Every structure is written in structure tokens, then in C-alpha cells.
Image 1: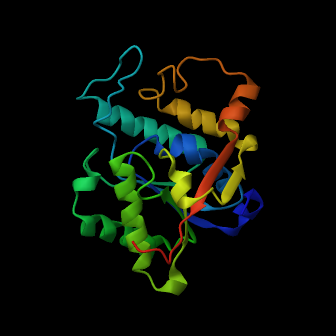
Image 2 (image 1 turned 120 degrees about the horizontal axis):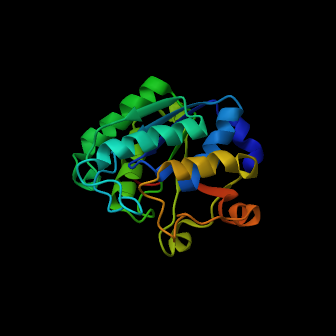
Amino acid sequence: MNDTQTTEHKRILVVFPHPDDEAFGAAGTIAKYIEQGAEVTYACLTLGEMGRNMGIPPFANRVTLPEIRKEELRASCRAIGIQDLRMLGFHDKMIEFDDPRLLEDTMLSLLRELTPSLVITFYPGYSVHPDHDATGAAVIRAVHRLPAADRPVVHCLAFAIGHEEHIGLPDVHVDVTAFLDKKMASIQAHRSQFQAAELVGNQVLTAEEIQLRFGQEAFWTYPMNTQH
């Protein structure tokens, strides 16, 4: 599958655990769908309140960070064009310890309300952070609880070391060149997180560097016949 097929989906649910999860891996794809007429709901489980980055130089602290990250998330969604942001109120770095049934029921409620044809989330087991994996797993379990005819397609982000040895190469490739302005605005909206030099920081990237680094997004279609 490639980006010529992104016109298929008109109602999309994006589920990630942290503000900024949408920015690097999926912002361009989401913006592309929206330009093509899709309604997008972003369900963000936490406010990333346990994040270590406080800006460079620091302008946040442990007390102020949740509200700052909430506003950064709203700014990112505006940059992308996301029409419906849901902040679900779970605790950062605790998703893996939450009641799995509660997570699953929360996801199922969203699926039944929104009836998306596409869900974008993390690939369970191959997304590095325990919150990422637990979120993706809850989404997959919830989708399996729908009648087979009502199940959306699930596109997953994966980036664990060696993940392609287990799940193969991504089967969805999206050229987001035309949406790089929106993607970069989404990334830069998360000011408290992405000023580190190894991320974006205050670097002035050339158009060629931006294209090379951010111009393509890739996803794995989750095999819904797989044990969950």
C-alpha cells in the first residue's frame, strides 16, 4: 500500500499515549488525510507530565509541565488541522500498570462512538516505550471486540531495534512532502520537548535536510488474525 490510497478513509481515530507522539511519525499523514476531507479524532491518553525535558533553557518544572504540555498539544493539533482532540486523563508512565480492561473499554467506547475506518496507533511490542506498547495493545484488543465486519484497518508505528526481523517491512508508505510545513509546525509546537539538539532544537535545517529526515512516513497494517 502506498500514499495513493490515503483517500480511502474519511473518519480516522488516532490513539497515542503522549503529547508529541503524533508529531514525528504521523503528523504529515494525518494532515494529508484531513486535506482530503477526513474527520480526525486524536485520543491522547496522558499529558506527558512525567517527561524529563523542561525546555532549553528550562521554562517548565514538574508543577507547570502538565499545563504547558496540554497547550503544546493543542497547538500541534491546530498545526496539523486535527478537528477533535480528546485528552483522556490517564497517568504518564503508568499506562502499562493501568487496568487493561479499563483501557480496552475506553478504546472500545471511542470505536463505537466514532466508527472510524482507520485507526493509527503504536505497534504493540515494537514501539520501545511501555506506554506506547500498552496503548497499542489496548487498541488491538478493543478492535477485536467489534464484529469482524465493523473493524477498522489499524496502521501502526514501530521503531524498536530489530523490529523488522519480527514484523517485516512497513507496508504503508506516505509521501508527506507537501505537508512538511504542517509537520514541522507540529514538532515545533512541543517546545518543552524538542529543543534538544538531537531532536530539532534550534537547528536551522535546509529544505533538503527536512525532506530527507521528515518527508516520508511509514506504517505497518496490523494483522487482525494475529493473537492479541
